[in-house]
Length: 397
Length: 118
Image (tube, rainbow over all chains, first blue to last red; front, side, top):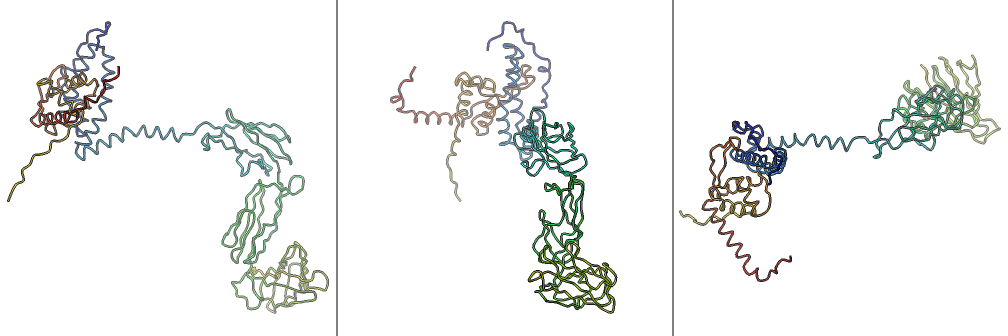
């Protein structure tokens, strides 16, 4: 050690002379199980050498030495405490270390888990190759997702938009777009330094036309719900973004765009496209051999029909109020001739005795009175060789 | 009834322990922590921390090679006492044994060791 030429002579701090009581750090070392005499001797050595160094090298250098010496001694102190301390003292030491480490662990965790700056913007759609399809007539907010370098979703509220090319679609800088006619446009979305072009496909839907009924037989194959979306030009819209949901999934379930019957009963399917929707009543019929002897709880039944040219089948109907429907095996098949006779009144005309089911309107609402009624299903000598389908009965009351 | 009388095996000495024992021997009645640390630094050329020196001295005391006494509080130490260490009989035996072991290990090596290149 050499004495610095410009360093004034060191003066003893008064507390070094008078304060022989253990300091907080000494008490702490005693608490974690270090021998108090050892602590006193070691601290005394540090103070003694600090004073010497302060006189020779200056107080600042001595302080640096002191801090370095204390830091170098910590591992030895910890090991000694773990070796010599009582179980309680060891527990205290472990708790102290854990407390001291906690901020570092939390800081490290925060650094590891923190979101980085956004590096990628992606349209919030299932497939970016399809672009963003808009079916709504009302203005709608575009949704983009921002990802950081690690692929995590980060804040993307400040995305800004502008029209680039294509159909003249009105879009605000905040991304509110109004589709009033059919057309495609390119829109630029930017967030800070990153920017991406989005293919915007305006397909506004003015109406969703759907069948009132979806008639299914228990055990049938899945079928697409019969609906069509109509655009502002009156033409069907094929690119749709929407949602279909079913009220009672014990009767039927939705798998993507198909509906699968599960058990006999009735439920409803709701289809939302843009800001329009349609509801369809789903009936799953129980296959039966005839209408004779139906129990009251059998509310939706269907008898299979298979008729060659010139064939006729005859069934007695139960009393009550029913929807009577012919369900062709294939939607395009021509229906047979259906004749009702007896004390029966049908909605298609009081006293109607013959109901020929046209395509699309193949249901009739009938009241069979106590006197009883019957139905004849006949296939003429013209048309298809074979007519196949089911005659369905849905009890209303 | 009989007793088995035998010699307790001497606990082994680590390198720093051996150096600390020798430093205490050299320092005589002036052997306390700071002096031992300086002696080690002067002889080995290595700056051991206060914690390392004191834990070693404490360990040697636990092994019975050293005994210590606490001096009077000193102003230069902030009113704290020096802890003076003295070699015990067991410490002396341990040093002799270490010396014998070293001599046995080194015996004849000098003739085959080449001079260190300068």
